[in-house]
Length: 185
Image (cartoon, rainbow, N blue to C red; front, side, top):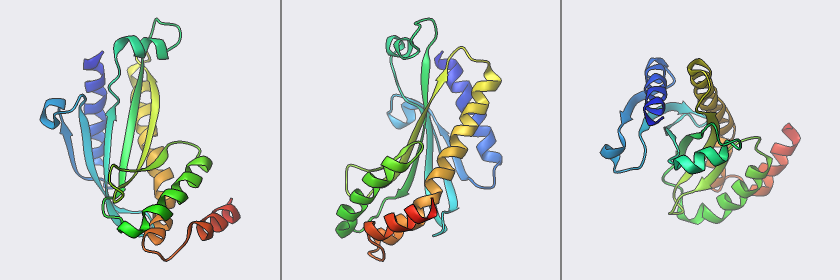
């Protein structure tokens, strides 16, 4: 099954290389990154209303075969978790951490999928989304699900990047953001 995951990632990599919305797309094997999984990395130029370049990473979460079968419920299939991580910022101002954390906690509650999270340091903000992929599904269906997951993650994350940058810069408060967001719904 690991070979199938690699095939899916390589197919996605080829597609992303052809999109003008991505640049510097690279495929890294697990051992190159000293990580438990292969990863596609790509720069996403002019992202959000701030038109900033952000890093996108795409991979299957490493999960043991026994857990993958248990997650599929019937025990005859495996469930894989395809994950997109978009690094919205890796240089948040130190004094913005509390306001950003309060905002993303409220925003995550309202998001239909995925979530924003702060990294190990308070200077990093990411959007992360995982979707389940059945190992025994038809290859074409799996490929469509990966592409759909990437597009959904990008659309969801991009919608809020400008607001989060304004909050990080101290130009908007969490309360102001919530009023705007609730009025736009």
